[in-house]
Each structure stands twice: as structure tokens, then as C-alpha cells.
Image (cartoon, rainbow over all chains, first blue to last red; front, side):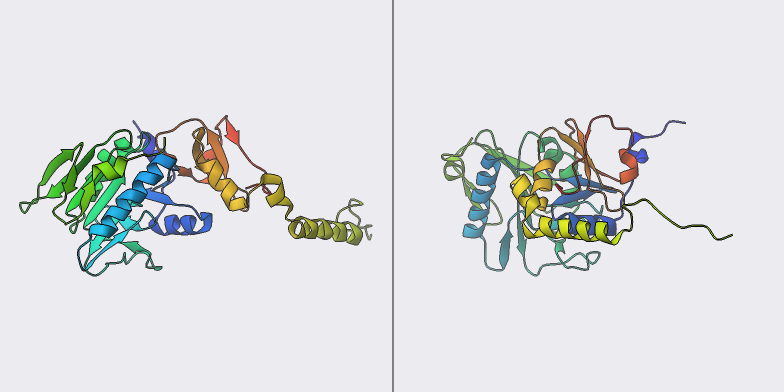
Amino acid sequence: MVTSPRSLHHRYSYDEYLSYERDSGMKHEYDDGEIIAMAGGSPRHSALASRVNAALEGSRRPGCTAFQSDLRIRVLATGKTTYPDATMICGPIERDPGDPTGATVTNPMLLVEVLSPSTEQEDRGNKWQHYRLIPSLQEYVLVNQSHPRVEWYRRLTSGGWEYHEATEGIVQLPSGVTLDLGRLYAELPD
Amino acid sequence: MLGFPHGYTYSGHPIARAAGVAALDLLVKDKAVERATGRPRSSRRNWLTHQPWTGDIATGCGSEPPKFNLGRVPRRRVLSCSEHDGHLSTLAPSPLLV
């Protein structure tokens, strides 16, 4: 019999994950029974994420709220739980019924991940596979850290996703969010 | 026949216990841990978690502190304490430090 290596690992329940994270005082993600410690961000990543958050706050539409990376998101369809670098929710916040603290939300309209070498594969692959199952999600934005490049997916009325990218100029997302690449990448720390 | 109950000279002795409690009080009062590590315990643990050479992290069994496997991994998983056994390169900090 062949046994998958993944099945050898201890599988945590969602409640155990919430409890562990509360006790450890640090941020972790939850994926298919595994608790994943979040990698520390570099000064460059932190500065870029800060500028993205400022852009979201500065261009959000009435009724929408921008959140930084402290907001925990849960994909109800799969249970995956993450801390995106930036989130926007339009309309009332829907909280995860599985988290009695009310700190986890389930209805982002826009999610942003600032790519880094250690997370890019996850952000483009596994995480995106989960995020696209969030019914409220309309836009998923990937911000490159090493050079000016912003990519985004937008949900079509057909249910599919349309891909765009920009390496200069001003990105105007359908949600109304504006990202000026010149300002995003000006004088970033190494 | 009634045995003669006794233990080691240091265990359970009121003077040894008082000395132990006094030593612990001093550690807290003088902030010995923070002074020794330069940062609070939670911050120290955070620092260890985010080092590039830190691999998976094993929760401590019972009241033990966590253990940090060494080596780069694509996803830094939190292992249960029983899963940790067998990993050869491990950093197991003193309970006072983490």
C-alpha cells in the first residue's frame, strides 16, 4: 500500500488552529488540516504592502472598507484561512460562523497579495485555487516585489476570470481602486 | 514494621523551596529574561520563527516550549509535539528564552 506523506502529518481541526494562533500570539494560515507559520516580510515587502493599502483606502468607493494584513479571511468552501496583504469588503461584513471571536471574515470583494520569492508559488497556485471559490470575490491582485508589475484577475459575469497585467502607468480596477505604479515603486527600500 | 520515610536532602525541604521561590521572584522582579535576550519572550519566539534557516516548528508537549527544526522548507508547518521526534537538527531553546 502506498501512503501519501501528507497523511502522515497530524491534522488540526479549525478550532485547534484558532486556539493555537491565539496562544502563540503570531499569525498563521490554515490549509487542509495544517497550520502554516507565516513568513516574515522584508522591509521592501512591508513598504509595498503599505502603499497598496494606502491606495485602496484612498480610492475605495462609498460602502467599501479597506483592510490591511491583520484581517483573517476564510474560504468557506474549503476551510482555507489566510491573511492577505490587503482586502476590500463592500457592504456588510460577513463573519465566519466557525470563529466565535468574530475576527474571521468570509466575503472579500478584492484581495491583494504582494509576491515574494517564498510565497509567489503559493499565491499564484494553491491560494488562488481557493480564493476563486469565494462567491463575493471580484478581483484578485498580485503585486510583484522585485520590479514594477501588477497583475489582476477580474470575475466575469459568466463566472470565469479575465487576466490583466501592467508594468507602468495607472491601473484602474473595475472596483474603482486605482494603483499608480510610479508611486507604488518609487524609492522602495531593498 | 514502620519504615523510615525520607527523601533527598534537597527535595521538599522548606529551606530549598524558599530559596527556589526567592530565585524565581528575582528573575521576574529584575526582568532577567528580557535583559538576557534583549527582547520579550513572544518577540524572541517570533524572531526564531521568521529566520530563513528555521524549518517546521513543533509544538511543545505539555508545558514545553516549541522546538524549531533547522532547514529551509517551502511551507513552515506547525507539527504536533509527537511528530517532532526523529528530526536530527533541532533548536530547542530553554523555556526561559522562548
